[in-house]
Image 1 (tube, one colour):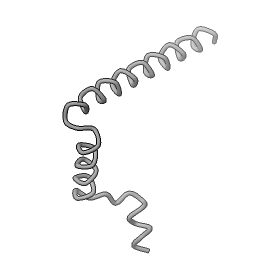
Image 2 (cartoon, rainbow, N blue to C red; image 1 turned 90 degrees about the vertical axis):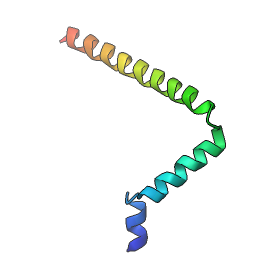
Image 3 (tube, rainbow, N blue to C red; image 1 turned 60 degrees about the vertical axis):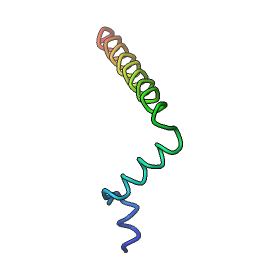
Length: 61
């Protein structure tokens, strides 16, 4: 029962700290801003594409 609770989203501050430490070790401090910039750009492009698609479907109605 306790193991199910762990996998269903009970994430505490220690788990977050461990994940952050592992990311820092894997990518280094200088690479993380570049990764976040790329992620932000990708999200922006995705939102623009979905917005364009929604506008196209509204015009057809």
